[in-house]
Length: 110
Length: 120
Image 1: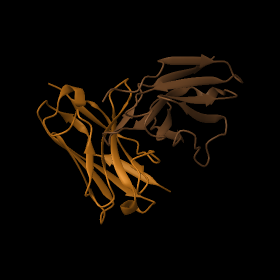
Image 2: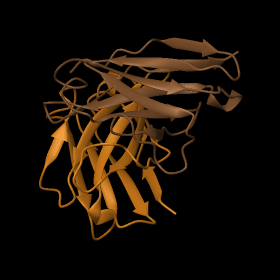
Image 3: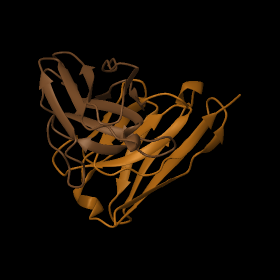
């Protein structure tokens, strides 16, 4: 199972919006609405920020939003803040009853 | 408060074995599916294995199938990962994580991880 494809890095200034893409195949992202996104700060455990493509868990800022079109899911962060600087990972369930993560995207807040 | 505490990591030679544990508290362990996810130093997250609530169904990533065995003890609120025939590429922080009762996704709660280092 190959990893989902994410850009290695993205950047934005405080207050701006950024979008991170996550491209899979018809066997994972394109097959199920079961894409989740995780935020990971250095040395910390990942934190769930989006589930089932668009759902935001309780306590997660509404500045985070998710979407999907075909085989590509996206995470948008609006009103960038310094604390948003972290690594972001997408994850999808697959037709093989396994889970696959993206390679991760490093977000830099300029 | 939900807590997942991994243990059992350490230094091991190639070909060796380890048994990782994940002690759960603050929630009804037996009603959650459980998983292991690993992260090699400086690299991304990789799903390793998952197990349903009663232990009857276990899934594995192709890279570990036949070498790793996931199990759980609901009476002791503990998840395990038996790792055999260790390879250099198994060096990673191993996290345990929960998913809902009837779903393999999303990973709602995570432990802080335990480091496994394979060296020769």
